[in-house]
Length: 306
Image (cartoon, rainbow, N blue to C red; front, side):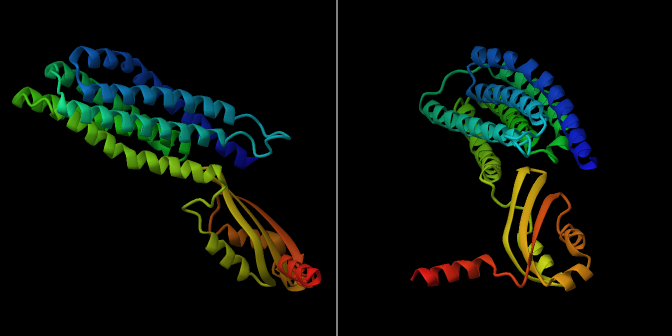
């Protein structure tokens, strides 16, 4: 019960952070889109696009938390928290798509630059920068505990860099009149955003494919199990993540029953495994060393077949 309470508390803190960030970001988004069309700035349009994806991402993240609170049932035995990972993957795909669009449009404008209103461009970018910094401050703590919130945090982070780029572009255009600066900085911002978005998508995809979490020491878990008194073999060892902060580990261990029991049995072995990672849902199936392991059964079956 204590384990479930900790996750509920984390989800509650994440939801509060997302609500505040959504209020800040969504409130500014419409103004920035209007300013982008009035000033003709591609860099500002890119920043407004980031604001839009920030807002959409925050909405989806909030929905994900709400759905993730549903209790486990006979169809979703681990509950619905993995919906957060779907939300993170969707946010990453939107960011990658936006970066590609802005880069293509930026290249086109390099050869056909348009006149932009630099002072207004800078004023709107400065306001957007303040909004982004406030949202980042709100989301930073929760982003360390939730991949879902981390996706939203990265979007706001990318948007913050975009606001800085717009300020720089506006200042240089104002001082030099060189209009190509606007698309150049828009392209640079998009290229900066791509690897971070790709990392988020890769991490989310790994979880959806039931891959071993990058930070999880599966070899260390196997070593700890094999070092336990009475354990003769470890097989069918699997590790995957429900979300970014909860890992499922399952294993079959062949043991010499008397020695294994005298050392504390499954409870002691579980405690030993948790010295590698304590944020795991652990299931261990014990098999007697007198019983053939699955590999031996398969070899016997193959030999009999031939």
